[in-house]
Length: 325
Image 1 (cartoon, one colour):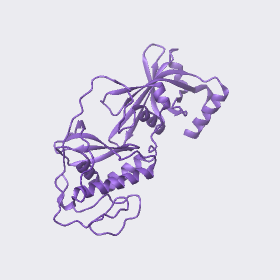
Image 2 (cartoon, helix red, strand yellow):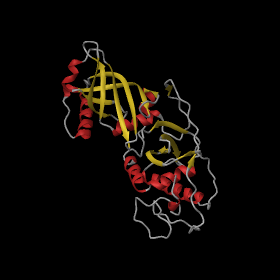
Image 3 (cartoon, helix red, strand yellow):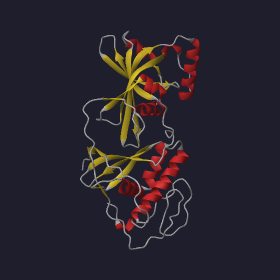
Image 4 (spheres, helix red, strand yellow):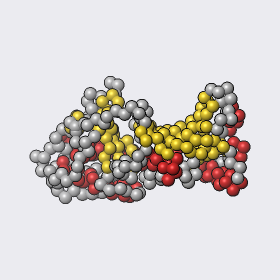
């Protein structure tokens, strides 16, 4: 729960611009609140009610629906563009499954280009292969995708030239023609974290999707907010989430064009994940900062009873773990 001593602070302190000298408040993104809050208004203990998502026991198909979260296809494309190392798996000549760590690049459609080095001589003639790629998000969650497809070596000189250019841009070195392989995507399995169910993505959905526009700034934004504005992450949970669970700690996990994910920690050492959407989709880092500004100001005014609740609170939390004491 938030200490009463901290209840008089205002929205998020600026982490992207110089601080402004103001009384009673430290806005996060260079915003001065309209009011000087009466000292009688104290923040009530933070409580979040939880509506647990039903456990899923089977993989889901990738059905396109309106959501406040990027599609599994978009998440997979984001993972592939932010990563350069994965685990390549196929069948060895003795019919045992064999997995090796590889570096990879992706073309504009997200097709993986791998250099297998001398290790590919151990593989059988079966071209069916998979590439598992994991993306650690803020040290709190590891989202991943596994691409299944058919492996082959490019024989077109123009295509090979383009591939070598992609490789040089990604790693700053030349790729050996003998070891370059293409993994033609057949389908993709996307998982939000370890021990969670996955969602199958078709090759067409994967190829048509785009990586998230905040992919290159998401980790930095989350780190700065978790480092400098922990109280305000708790305020987001208090105002935007409808819940009965006491929250002792909250950390932002990731941010994308549609919103952000937060992990909530209860005094009983349970860990929950909640998704808080932006008021509107953002297309770049500037838009994300602007949305954080507006949401932090709204949260502060609602908390101080200066602003009525004119939005629907998030009602669904997902229990993901129990912390070891």
